Image (cartoon, rainbow, N blue to C red; front, side):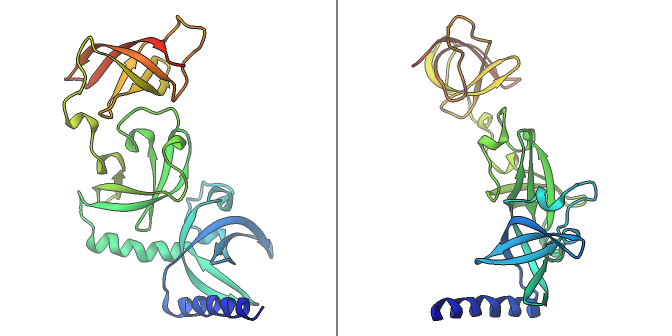
Length: 255
């Protein structure tokens, strides 16, 4: 009991110091709670529950149920008050501090680090130095995907390239090598084994060893339809270097 109390005191002391200094801390949004008619996001930090008014979460006005939108996300915050044994925090003020770094030190072309704060099948939300960007799948990956949630999860750290400083714009995929920066490792007529990487309305995309995708028309000659991750035998039919496309046909499914 005594050691637990000492640990708790140290955490409270750290929060009190952060209140004085404005130090930025990191915590996880775990639920929401209503106080005096207002909704607060409950943020877990070192086992303690801290409270952030929804207005201090830094989300756009049109976002409804702001605390719900950030559930499970790791957010940066500063401590703004201690009242009745509770600590109140602000994500907005932490974002304002980070934005000063963007304004003073960042330039176009820089590679910066961001954090995934939300992800849907076709969009991801990336926080970088106080700015939150909603990026479509096309700016997250070089290749096609059915669902970004297969590749990213909340709290993941990712690199991003600064496309524009003012207005702020970033691209995650441009911070990573493009598979087409190198010549294809396959040849027309080659037969190989590859996993199904994505399923599109126009066919199956299998992932080649060099990271490129090969588009195959719908496979209808089998009792079993390939799913993502299924290993298939593919024959390369054509390579279009100008359009950066590789086409093939699925010969059979490997069970």
